[in-house]
Image 1 (cartoon, helix red, strand yellow):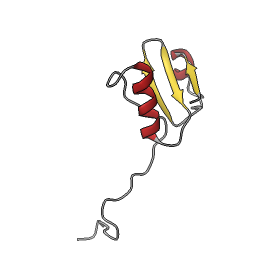
Image 2 (cartoon, one colour; image 1 turned 45 degrees about the vertical axis):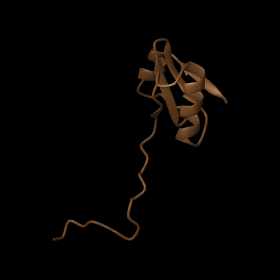
Image 3 (cartoon, one colour; image 1 turned 60 degrees about the vertical axis):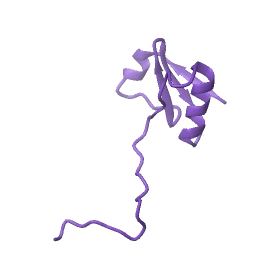
Image 4 (spheres, one colour; image 1 turned 45 degrees about the horizontal axis):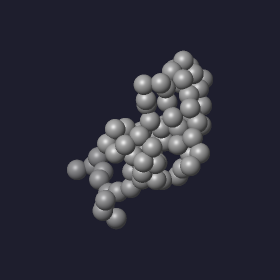
Length: 77
């Protein structure tokens, strides 16, 4: 799996563009995992660093899937 390492100063820059969707924060900086699925990224992190040591974070806000299809909540009572 392809990864990109980024130091804290680069990550904290206001104009920083995230190179991938998922990352982990380690003691040495940030490691971005280039994959489309969060589960695949978490499996790689668990294999590389040990299970339960790091949690994969998302670099972009994503819209969650609704649990109930066809069910919508409105502000109107």
